[in-house]
Length: 399
Figure 1 (tube, rainbow, N blue to C red):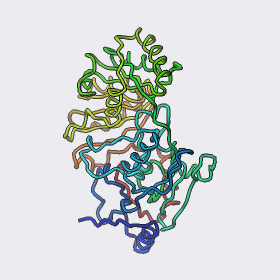
Figure 2: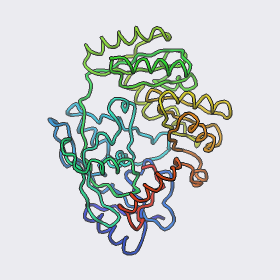
Figure 3: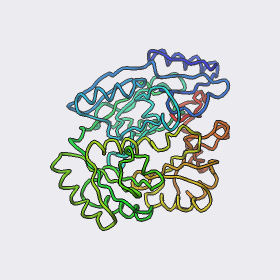
Figure 4: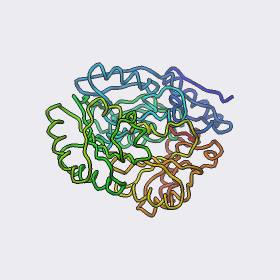
């Protein structure tokens, strides 16, 4: 059984790394373990942040919070809900699609740069991160950034660690900004569009001054697996509006009128809207209890439907789109088809694909992550050497 270390303080975590540096003993960094794809590599212990828990500071007036990395996400969200505040970037819960357990942690959210549908307007998780503390590969405790946005000291370092998946350091504390919870929300739904028509409709909606905060297209193959099957027949193109009730009403009318030229228009109320976008966020149609390969693909918004159309000519795929078509949740029916997928990603202008789910032997083959260009890989190597000169932190994880 792989040894798991759960230090209860930052100082204890630093001492563990210092000892490991002397013996050249590797660690896999883990938060709540909800995104782990692989067992720890042979000879590596697990260094978990779960013992580093608790909200350090919360200033609702300034809309900022500081929490230790192992703090459960549900604890953070419960504290924010009392003040009608929220994490702007809607971190997804992928336990359903990954078949994993554990409790998501706030440190894990930022280590994975986990971002949901509102990324279109609010930015990714890293854009909300103001500062952090971490233990590097030398066992040194480092502080970067600050508790207010105007303090930009170390801001690039903060953004660098967000999305590093535990490959550079053990994040021990994070400071992040918040947003007020919208008073209400509604979704304008356009039915019956094919993927290309939906891409045009979403582009039109995003160009309008109605402040769309979510744009997704759900082809007929997945439409019935959203919102309890309550969506109208036909593929569904969903456009979310949020804010004050009076504002949402005016904007919804304007958006519905513009979308009527594309297809049948319906409007979803706040309750159905909340459920629908939570399911979009969590890729709920693919929480099917199978190991069928599931990719998370990021491309230019106009390229998503082109990519899927090309793949359908050669292999069996199922897909839906978020981020105005720029995020494609892509489930293969049989093998991951990594080489084919990446060839077509390059053909449509480039992007990034991560294999979230597959049989263990497929994941072990090392095709889960996007290969880097030689220059980028060299730069990453220099960054890694700066943070972790002895290569103690081995990352075969999703976060």
